[in-house]
Image (cartoon, rainbow, N blue to C red; front, side, top):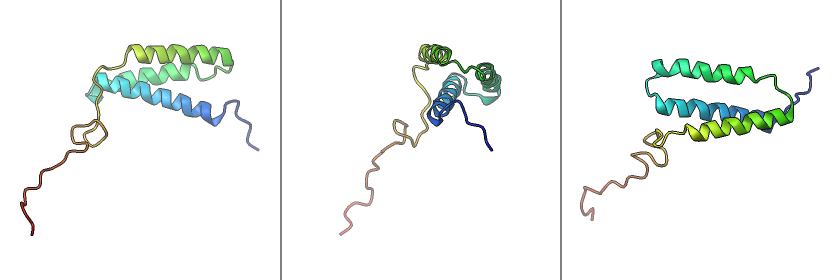
Length: 102
């Protein structure tokens, strides 16, 4: 039998989302992946350090601290892929160069 998890699926989703937002934010500041990888490992180590925290009050404090740090270090001009909303090629109307077709 599998043991019951003390955390809900929503909790796990939130932690994974927070982790990904930290990684994306750090990648916005360091474009070269060879220089970014050590920072990604530091972020992973910080998340692993708090992996065994089960007290709900301590978790709320950790989440608030993490969200505040993420807001404080957010990049003012984050990278947006070209074809995503807000990217350089998103919804570009190309002028019709064919003239009248009829």
